[in-house]
Amino acid sequence: MTREHKFDPSKFWVNPEKKLDLGKRPTKAGKELSDKDVAEDALAQDVSDLRQQQEILYANRTHSVLVILQGMDTSGKDGAIRHVMGGVNPQGCRVYSFGPPNETERNHHFLWRPGPCLPEKGMISIFNRSYYEEVLVVRVHPEFLEPQRIPGVDLQKPKTVEAVWKRRYKEITRFEKILSSNGTIVLKFFLHISYDEQRQRLLSRLREPDKNWKFNPNDLAERKHWPKYQYAVQEALIRTSTKETPWYVIPGDSKWYARAAVADIITSKLEDLKLEFPKIAKDESEKFGEYIAELEKD
Ligand code: AMP
Ligand code: MG
Image (cartoon, rainbow, N blue to C red; front, side, top):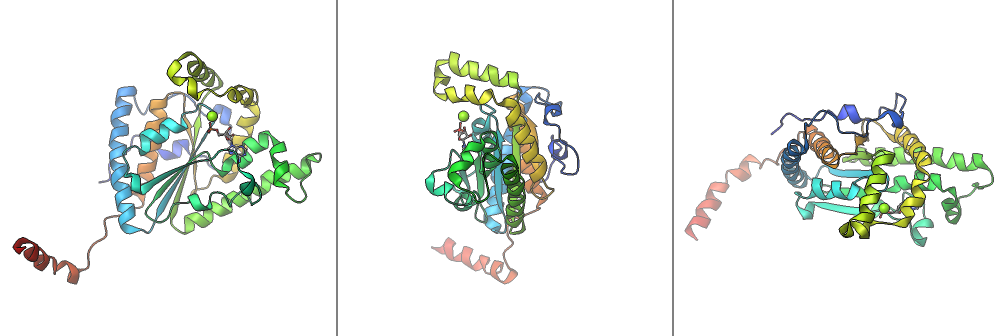
């Protein structure tokens, strides 16, 4: 079943041992796919492979998959989920969107929230945004920390706030390591769009009536913090990317390229597990002849 993959995951991987300059990572489509039609064919192949991979995953129940999608507003997270997971058995896959935490969630450690959303063995969970927002949007707006009432944190004392991010990167890394050692394949994608591409997409949301519902005036306010977000993303990625729990920066300005890349990386990572449908024990399979005969006589 293994076949050639168009994308080399290591090209997109954030290597924690190297410097990450997000501004230098491409947002434009790479040369793996010549155009949209080629990308659609590649995506269809991966979607079909992914369906089978999930079935094998479910049959074995040794592993699960957690896919985390992050990206600026309009970066194409929803579309990527729709296209990449559209072919997977709905019983094998769940999608969770992370918006602002409610009061109960704010009264817990931030890694309490994803608990019930984690994939059980055999399943795939997709996080549309995630607990990473706690080091992204919250880092850009440290006042969001206030209702969390974390001991020792004083917004007037920047060092105490800075310590929160450092601690959170470590906690996230440890948390994901725990998941990984229990058989969860953690794959994290940052859909990387340019400032100008976001402008175009916001304009289409305003100009095209069918897209009006997607427009949120708050996106304009957040856009003003673009450099702060890019910095927060860069820090989060470099501090929490590991070999076992990798971050991939996916060029996002062409939706067709980003979707094909995400699908291809997920399928190739699942293939690396070399899982197969479980084999039936010989003494059990020997009885199959009798079962068949019984049913044929029925
Ligand atoms: P959307 O993805 O467009 O549905 O928007 C979800 C919004 O929730 C985004 O503006 C996120 O920044 C925000 N959000 C997600 N997680 C958190 C969090 N932990 N704290 C504050 N805001 C969050
Ligand atoms: Mg939004």
